[in-house]
Length: 162
Image 1 (tube, one colour):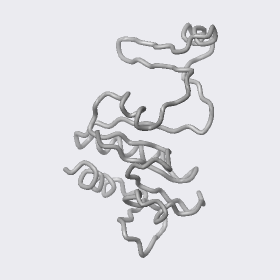
Image 2 (cartoon, one colour; image 1 turned 60 degrees about the horizontal axis):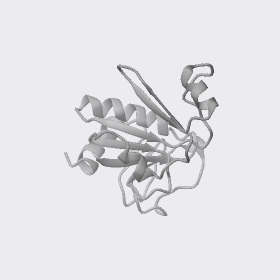
Image 3 (cartoon, helix red, strand yellow; image 1 turned 90 degrees about the horizontal axis):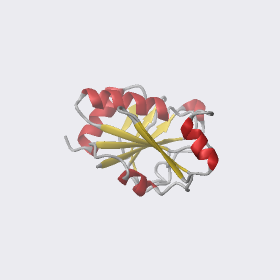
Image 4 (spheres, helix red, strand yellow; image 1 turned 30 degrees about the horizontal axis):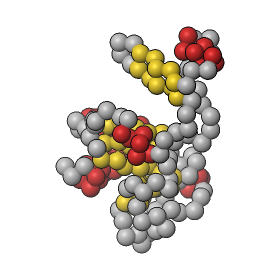
């Protein structure tokens, strides 16, 4: 599976770009899965449900399954990104949101209001920049953040080789 990171500082538009890329790439026949990094504790279960009660009782892992979905909730520390990707079913592309320091190809997002220092050229794994403001003199492609068609074209040709 091909893996592409979407990296940027808080409020740079990572989730919005991932959402729009999934839709556009699906429209083009590309199967996409995602891995999302969270900087905080989170819960995927509602208090009072049977699975939450299993967790509260001390289960190491709880697997919830229905005819349409399943989810594994683990109390173990998260594996590293390569291990997480191997747990996904095979698809054409895995979009990774966050995980800025991982050694994977990434599109860097720059939004003027988000601030933060540029990651490129310091991170040689940045393959393109998507920004809401002009950026000159770069050795890699620079796209307007809202130009999803051109960004998807880049992903199709440069990442997926199609």
